[in-house]
View (cartoon, one colour):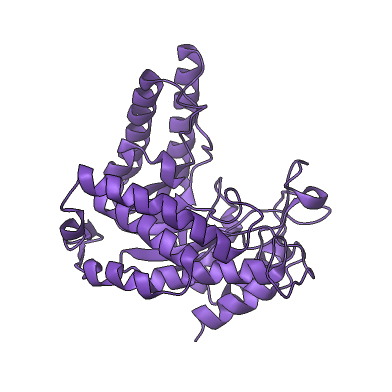
Length: 354
């Protein structure tokens, strides 16, 4: 089964971040209209009314703890206090949602790591231990899969204790910004050919390793077991006309070969101003967003170990002001803040509701 859906936020004009029944009903109507079957409660537990609707409509939920950007660069006392708070928050989430039919996985945090939060080897060790504690706490619940969302470059050894990798991937927006999709792909091509050669030296049999079973685990008494022929899929990538897709396939094949875990794209996207159209797709245009997200739907079809894509975000939402936030909004939604569809929503509807 493929997980197709979104990260979301409880946000709406005038009321801001608040529980509004009519907005929740509209959000779930948008999910059904576009053909989504799941969502992640990024980056905090959502209203119980929201989960009532998910139970009613048969949506799958990755329930996420309110732990974002955990840092281990502070004084030891602060790190310990933060870990105690993260543990308490996760325990409260598990207690609240453990009987929910819709909840199929726990996400214990979002985007830990990074150069600033783990500036030393000791900080990196502390992060791994802290994440392993959170993963173990969620696994003790005993009935759901366990993961945490991370940027691909910041994957931690603790990811090996998870059931699957959740990757927040923003090629074309947060890096290699302001370039056409084709140019992004050409420049990344040379970069990742070099990385692939380096990886082959470190692990010469990595292509053979991708033939191994990618997922074998018990979930509610059922043994999940998949053994795709990834070597043919990897070779086939060189025939694809989309260079961004080539880059993403190489990136994900290497991560899968290393961690031996199924992969879910937990975030992807680009900010898009409603009504901004360009004949040659450029940043902020609806055409650019639709084209970029189409790459991810293709990625899921081509790589059998990629079992889901959650687009960031279902709808535009308010954020602190900064140069990347036009009018103080994050415009990565495929629906506007008033929940009207952009071009990308129509593209996803065609892809997810054939």
